[in-house]
Image (cartoon, rainbow, N blue to C red; front, side):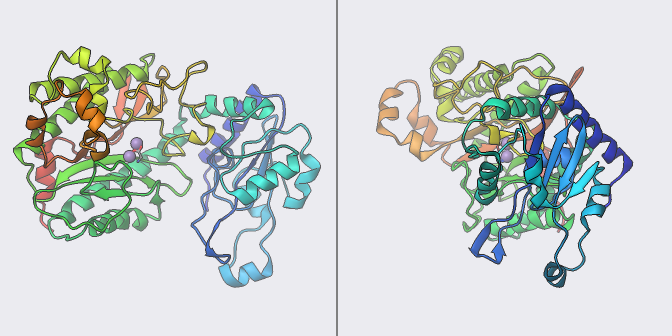
Length: 459
Ligand code: GLY
Ligand code: MN
Ligand code: MN
């Protein structure tokens, strides 16, 4: 992978900034591949995002040691049999030059440089076991960090919360490819018979740019199942298709976009009514995004607009502000308004809520707020998603307790008239700027009329 001088300057700058925050060494492992069904058949490898942030390129079975702004690289040279199977790969020295390392050694020498070092456990079990054995403490990816590991995690969070110029270049690339993928999905819908064909058209664009998907694509006519990763349903004329698909660049930066469109090319009037409510909630959030604004408030704005819309349609009965306090909106919009986006689609979620929640805050136990992934004031340079939705989740709406509890607040007969709206989500990626916000995904239309126009494009 060829690297530019701007890229190297950025890596140096990130390492320098870390050195200003901690006075002990940090060792970050890239991780290794995990086997799928037998040892030699492996899942596609994805390095740790913390490694990528400071190391810059996707290396496998490598570690970087960061101290006082300097980087030591630990990686083995490719062995002859690997060259036989995989072709020529760069040597340790070439990689070191590529990422601006100050020193480079075989991985076995890492054990001479462990003293007082902090780390963050990677996701693959083989590497996190290795980390635990070398550093003499349990380092489990699902366990909250402690001691100097916690100090390191907080330092990295404070850097990664806002994006530098080089990160934004990558994030914009991921967005541009994802926008093209969504357009391809819309265009193929009129001739596709299965969800899988739409997924294929969308991912073909991403693969064609030598990118990967940043997460398992959701392309489904059952958008009410929030993490539906099946693609076998047929597309029927009255269906809405929900596509949540985002690309990840070669150096790991992600986009996260959702659009919902009618298979027939035209929204029914009931679909259009609800779509416009979700879009109104989405637009109301954008108007408010600016440095200093609490992301939790943005969530409540979306909840209020959705509730007002459902009251206007006669689906909910009561005063919108009272209904929001009772979490009525959450029966139809059970997730949070969005999350941080960066090297991870839910950025730094490997650290639990350390990145998403301001220090001292905890997840609410209210149904309407417990799935809020981000709860801190916004800052210029943060990239967040805004993704309101409306879903008729059978597990919620068919629950006899819920039907009983909300017998008079929901007009169930009226709701039945909206049976052709199973799931709608509109998700965009928004950069917080000094003066407000910039919607990075703005090139992909989200108004119902404009989506219908895209669906009419000639094949
Ligand atoms: N694609 C995952 C999400 O929207 O959060
Ligand atoms: Mn998202
Ligand atoms: Mn998404």
